[in-house]
Image (cartoon, rainbow, N blue to C red; front, side, top):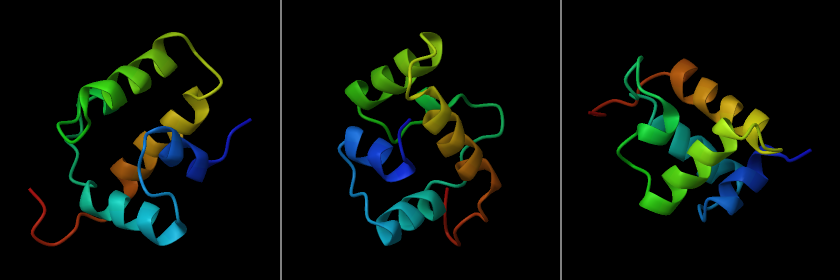
Length: 81
């Protein structure tokens, strides 16, 4: 069982609560039909990790699903694309 901040660390992203909230707010404009690994803000290795976590139903898959949900439910940041 992993924690949300550990997923951010695994992705090489800052993982303090403020950093996580900032990331979610900044990227909350993710297209409704877009799969999380296909979002344009991931590096190739981050996208591969996310895709692999979901397709192989790894022990990270719950946290990846939680991140996807958080991005879709967060209010869109003003000025976000």
